[in-house]
Length: 293
Image (cartoon, rainbow, N blue to C red):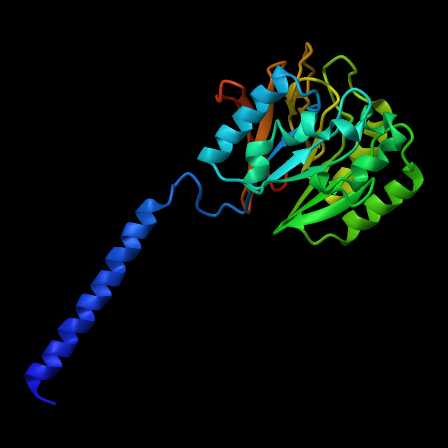
């Protein structure tokens, strides 16, 4: 092969490589940098006490949709009282499918648990069967990468003996880096109902033993984030449609009655929590470390 021929092929190859590199750079510039953060393992949100079909629910739902447009996520933890007032599945269009139509259209998946209002009709059985809530039972577990979620039935008529045995078994054999438990009722709370002494005695040592970093709930219609209590942070996100007054305790890091939802960005060594109001502003930020005392 002549020298000129070899030079031609070399220059052609370099030109093609340059075009690929340029195209790659051009493509990368088209990706919204807010959608992807370095080392981000999972982004999800939580909300509760939503199922009213009223103005407040639509306002929070719109804020959740706006957040999705800025920071992509595909999981919502729905922590109970999904259908007011009595859990009637006939209202599902009014109180779930229409308020969250934009998110459902974007294939965002809801993972629900049962609240006290949800069990007033047929003990919540119709909600368990509803595909949009993705419940595998009254209590169940699922994973997203290095995060394992444990959904509980915290109602008074729950099968506590079998459920607690199941929970301890699942926690003990979990290999997940992050363990997140959610249920409808609070363990620690500064609102109308306050903390649950029985739950504190039951869950606090169990969470500590198996390294549960986060518990999410509703029932109280406010937002509250605790400091780490024996290694677990407790977040109430029950102002998803209506709100009630809230106070503070010595373990409270932040509390407010603002209509809101909570957003979580999970990394290898921490979870960043943001509380977002219907004005789309973040009014609280917190860090949940992988391990804390």
